Image (spheres, helix red, strand yellow):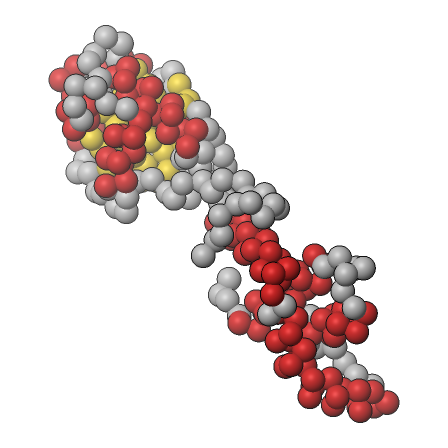
Length: 252
């Protein structure tokens, strides 16, 4: 297994880097908004007639019996005006709409943020662990591996930068491994360190040698982040938790 790990590391190092970068139903959105408004309304503040009308509008497929034919016809004639009145009821509606937007953003973010979460830099001890970190990870997870050695310029600063980015991008798996621990140390001489290898679904996306040369004498997480974003190797940042208050900025 160790031999296979060494071969994989050598192939990745020599390989050419490749830099990559609910269907919405309008009626469903409207009905979801109506339901959200009904749930968020204070029961004592909404007139019974409006509450009943809103409940009917939030259930557009409600069946009517033959005895309710007249009621249905009256309801259909009045629904557009009632809907306009309910959805455009000035200040309290605006507050409710803001909360609805926030909830939609949270729901969307949860749908897109599937897969494992990390938030730290994993130290790999040998080539076998390197292979497992790359090949056994979720296919949607980006794996960024830092090949380093103690005492080499740029390695310590890059490790610190990646630790910061790991907290900012918890869906990305950040790893580090000493060149001497890879089993292919002759391929990772001090001249090519620090090196970054980037994988997804077990495939090498990019490899960068002497990556610290891309930065100035001193560099920080923001510099490494900009560099990785230039090649499309980082996902969108995690959205901050959205509260239920109204003192937060509007979501446009």
